[in-house]
Length: 582
Image 1 (cartoon, rainbow, N blue to C red):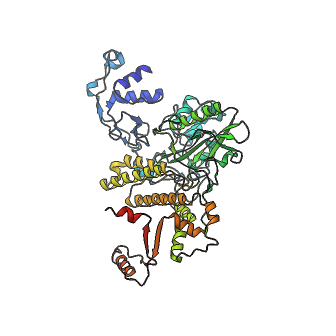
Image 2: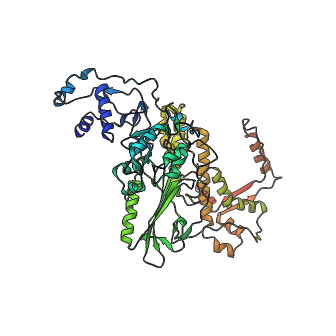
Image 3: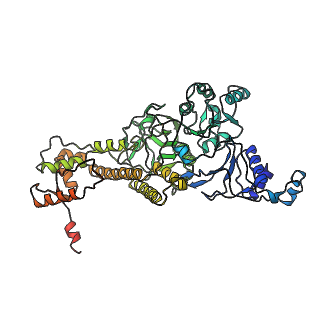
């Protein structure tokens, strides 16, 4: 095996996992020529796939794996050392002629395209004879039934049974004992986010609709709904539907804040524990990861809790699919902070590839931390009950509109923002600005690339980045790729709303006591630090603005009319003084 790996490395070839894959790659390279680097990601990661094409196993960036596939890759002559050429089996090879195109049978699966994997998604119909058509399954560890019996059954159901776990593996069948032991194959499955399922999945699959049962049966705390390549060459995943195989998660979760941190109520200790803290560092992390190709939209929450009155420490973690109740959680108890800290930092490194407390660098295939600030207190709801404000009624209406947080919540819910994993007003401004940056890059890409297929990897990469930074609730559906000007505009407006919400929350913060002592309308009017004046509807100024509005109403916007209800003049405090030098 080491000699075969050495030959691949000497020719700058990708070294796959598993002896059979190594033999396959070496045979291909010797027979047809060594593969040149991937033209998309520029890495030496191309490898022959049993699905009838060459796929890249590299990464476009820290956010996305490369999706390049081809049937006719660029090659160079494969170099065999002189001592290897003396081996009888190699003497007959005419290496000078071994740069050839590999031919495939006519019925072989064609290379997948972005549109097929992200657009037309199909679900296996219940009762089909081969519900596992397209599944690549690996059996790991000691199982409750003989492996020979399971292999026969899986093949009958249409699955391909393989010896090694690779990136192309659809699912792994194993046991909870093996998952806990974390054998080498289980670790590889975790690295590639391949779900681990019990043997009972086979019986469930016989009824059809196998894909929708993956997340509900998985026994690992990782793994997404897989996309499988059927024999017809089409990608298959859970179809878009209003019906989710998982019960819908609640849209909002009440978080109790103690000392600047919010204990997850799912831990069962939000009433008697607080987030462990060293100096200003709080041991709590909310992580996200989106992969459009695999259809994953995952979160992972990790907290180190300290009991309010006893010397007890807890590591709480929960994981699942954003916007659904699919997932699970685990609580571990520790008697000393040292052991709890060791487990927390170990889990954080395992999930992110970064040491806790260091400058974060995104690692491909790993989670990314969301910057969430819960603050030191609950933000009070704006209420104008009992107001005796003497402000003009139109100005009072403006104040109500600016601070109507409930209306903003509803607006963001309609934009598919996940308010359960990302409490309103708590996502950091820096993260929102990073999301803006991703949208700007996508907009530039759209303007310079009329055909998405020519830059599909880049569109995919930036979409993954955006959805990771700003968690979205798509239920069991795969997040859509951001590839049109209209979608970019919609997401930009969503970010505008998030920033406006941050301003409203900052003004509402600390206002609970003030609300009890002052008129709420007057109080929040003063917080705007501006003088608003209502313009008389009979004035020349009102008529002039009304005319401007009418004249600039585009002819293409004929489906609606505009009416000027109120006109305000705004003078910000100190603005005249700042402007005077100019």
